[in-house]
Image (cartoon, rainbow, N blue to C red; front, side, top):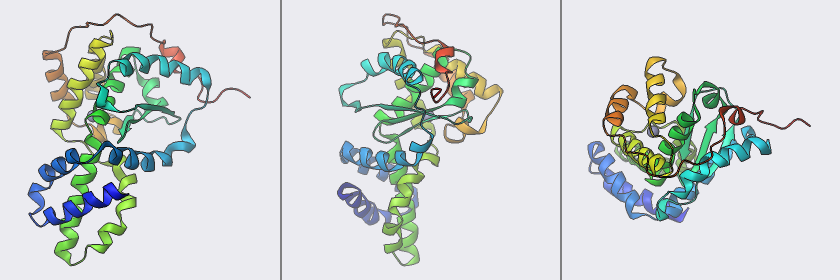
Length: 256
Ligand SMILES: [Zn+2]
């Protein structure tokens, strides 16, 4: 909690500068902090999903086979990527700070190819590796602190900090973060030998049939798809042995 407290104090001081500068200040404050901050926020937020985690070893093994080639191509400073499959029909996947990755069974049920699932995973790994989650927390925190200072008290903001860490799941990314993660994911997929067009295909389906899950935190699929398809990196890695969609759709829990 020491790192978070330091960040809070920094943002409280800077919060006087006004709401408009919060985004820029938040980014700088986060980039100056260590990755331990991401892990502590992510761990706290991830614990709320443990009850919905799938336990079928065959399902988990199939997902790990999909994640392995992506993990192998991550930059050295990207941190550990921990993958959890959640038993939830919502078409969604998300990354919490510190590399806590979640894929919901609804996303796999909706997907039309393994490459789509891999594409979404690569994109989410981008959000974690590029530390977008803590930037969102810092921006939200900075805004709340600026507001509470204006209203006459900082203590309430500090008391609400623990709650905010678990709110990180519902905070939307901004356009620049989405583009950064699209580029990161596409490059990662290409290096891993997986066609990055799968991410474009997923965005295309979200555009054609909007669903509330993934789109609520990942805006502007049309613009992003256009941009992504204009500069898709060529596949450079050797094609890995990927699981089939059927393997990714095995039951969440093994039969007793
Ligand atoms: Zn995103």
